[in-house]
Image (tube, rainbow, N blue to C red; front, side, top):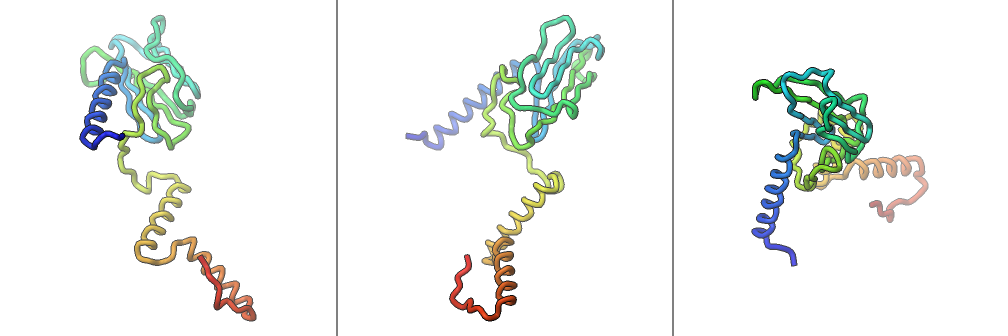
Length: 191
């Protein structure tokens, strides 16, 4: 028997609280969009870029301070584009005397959410992620065309009109009928 809506809301709230607690214990903060992932790792303010040990490969990440145990070290849950991924050492406005290693990972598959930065870290429930609304102009040409066609077809259906595919079929039939006037199409059913 499945839980009632109230029980499910309580279960979901407890799961979110547990995730939040686990994420707060990590030695870094991270955020993601469907296409990329950003990580910030606080380090002492006296360090320079040459003191950092940052390695980003297609399937692994290693981040730390040279001569010390790595802060992040392990396989990524999904591949990245290493040539499009970067890291910088930045000085945040607060707290004082600190710096941050800022890492940008370009996801190879821009259609999936990551449950964690590296596979040994606590996982998020990616089914609960609420993405920001995106604009059609943010999409690549092929995806944008597909979404615009879906939107057009949805509007056509709502108005009781044929979809783009149905219109193409009717047009092909009309041309065929024009090319073959000797044939009788009166009993033909299309659909």
